[in-house]
Structures are given as C-alpha cells and as structure tokens.
Image (cartoon, rainbow, N blue to C red):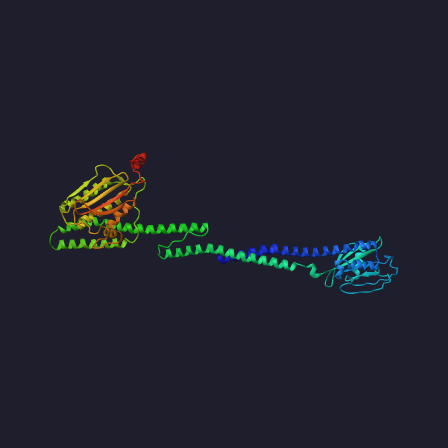
Length: 487
C-alpha cells in the first residue's frame, strides 16, 4: 500500500507538472521572441524620421551609427533609386558596414535598390517581397532572423530598414526559465513522494500492527492489543479489534470461572458425604466409602485448580436485579443446620428479620455463603460454633460469617491465597468467589478475629448507585441528601 501511494503521487504530480510546465515554457519562449522583435521594431522606427527628411548617404550613415543596432552592425538601410519603380534610372551607391563587415557597391538602378547602408543579410527576394507588399516581415537568415521594416519615402519609393536579431537574443532567458521550471517540477515530484511516503507510512504501520495483533490473537496470545493510532478508519478498526479481544478474553474467563464455580459447588455435598462417611464406623465398606469420597474430593479440587486461570467475571446484578440477603441466608442456614446438628455445632443467625435487597445474583450469593460455611465445617473441629450476621446500612450491607475455631494466623496471606491458588489442601477459590461478589458491587472482603474467638469474614456489599425495584425512586436520593447534611 505504501509504494502504491508513492507511485500514484508520482504519476499525478508528473502529469500536473507536465500539464503546467510545458505550456508555461512555450509561453516564456514566445515572450522572449516577442521581446526581441519588439526591440528590433523600435530600433527600425528610430531611423524612420531621418529617412523621411533625407536620403543622403552620409546623413544616413551617421543616423545608422547613432542607433544601438547600427553600433553593433545589426542595421542595414536599403533605399531605392529616384526613378523606381520604373527600373530605368541610373544611380551610384556605396555600402559601408559598421560592426560586422564593410560592403562598397555601385549600382545602375536596374535592381531597384541602388543605395545600401550597412551589411545586408536578408535575401534579395525577401527585400523585394516586403517592398511589394508594404508590410514588415521576418526572414530567417544565417545566425538568426532579419526584421524587414518598410518605410515610405514617397508614393512610389519605399525604403527598407533591416534589423538583424541573433538567435541568442531571440532565446535570451529561455534556458534559465526552463531550468527553473524543471527544478520546480522536480521539487514538486520529490515533495509529493515524501508526503505520500509519510501518509502511506501513517496508514501502513497501524494496518501492520492490526495484522500482527490479529495473528497473535489467533495463535492464542490473548494479551495482544493494538494502539489506537493512525487515520480515523484505522483507529476505529483498532478500537473494534481491542473490544473484540477483550470480549474473547472475558468469554474465556467466564467459561473457566463457570467451570470452577460449578466444580466448587460440588464441594458442598462432598463435605456432607465426607462427614457422613466419617460416622459409618469401621469396616471394609466404610473404608471404601471414605476412600471414594476422598478421591472424588481430590478430583474436584484438580478441576477447580485447572479452571482458575483467568480473571473473575462480574457477578453484580443489573439495576432491576439483585436478591434478598435474608432469604438466601435462611435457605442456606437451613441446609447447613442439619449437618451442624449431627456434629454438635451451635449455629446462630441474626439480622434477617426483614428483606434486605442487594445488587448480587442470588446464585452467586448462595455460592459465596456455601464457600464460607463449607470452610467452617472443613477447617474447624466438630462442635465448633458458628454464626451469620446481616447488617443493613444506608449505602452498604455487611454479611459476617464467624466461628469459634482456631482462627487464621495470617489473614492477609489467606486473602492472597484466595486470589492466587491454594495450599494445604485448599483450592483458595472459596474466598475468591466471596471477593468477586463483594468487589462487583464496589465493596471488599476482610478477615479478622470474631467475638466467638475464631475467624470472622466480613463481606462488604456496596449499595451506592443501586436502587431496589421495591424501593421508591426518591428514597435513596433523600437518604444521600440526609447523609450529606450530617457530614
């Protein structure tokens, strides 16, 4: 594309230069010719007053010598005999050239031009033709041109003034003008090539980057992106490509996270199976059951670790979506309470007396609660109490999951593990699911020491900018204004 633009620019510029420079050069040449012959006509007209007064040879020689053309030997005067045009008179003429040569002649008057002053260069027939037609004429002579200007001496006598115009005077300044035109044309061509090359480079480089990024994305390099540079069309193509690449990455991430989430949700019934298998007692069947449950749990953990390779997807609900925290907490606590009763655990719930709407999909909140409660049953001994508290604020809802277990020695490391992979038999996806739920609403997750003596996981779910479908439109605005006034 780059060289194609250069070739097009060269072709167009050359055509423009030829279309303008050639006619202009011809005009300049014609102007130089006209200037030369106009000057010759002026020189010929300068001798006219003398011819109208006298035809004396000495007077005419002095008049010719006083002109610029005569001083350079470029003027000649041809005067006919007194009895012309009868052709029978006699006369004597002497011709003296000044500048280029001297010519002395004696005529009898039979040729009709007995008196010649200066060096004659025009042919005899050209002189007779001008004398006959009575109009100025230009004749080509060796070394240049001769301007033949007729001057009437009487009704029957016509003198001819001959001005010699050399070739170099006719073409004076033409070569220089043509060289200037050629230089300007060449400069225009070179300039057009440079401009076309820059424009082509400005178009080609973004197109090449777009092609390289497309190849890289096709090879599986999901981080390939294109700088949004260049012409408007290529910038639009770069924006579209980057958006497409982001969508591809997001789709792959969603697919992996979906696989990981579905696999992690299998751990809830697996936990129940493992605890029930532990109560089977001794015997080959019990051992096989426990072994099968452990093997299944390891396979699920392997699936989770394999699937967790991309950034989490957004789980926040739309402006008209969301769920009731109280309803979800009651549902999940009903499920875990039966297992807690079998293990002798005390379960407590608070803050779910009324509906509490949040901008989170119901399934995602249930998965987050199952992940935290499953960790309680998995990582604390039997008989350890736990609790779930819901606090409904003006701009946030806080869900606290606490237990009376040994606690977490390094909460920061636990959160990092939840984001980057598990250790000690844990996939780390449980806290990652909880983090995703909180951060999708502008909140966060924190781990600390609970009032029960063990671990407390606080889920901060932001409500700023979200309105429940059941809430009047002006209610949240009034709450914000009240809060701003208090501040």
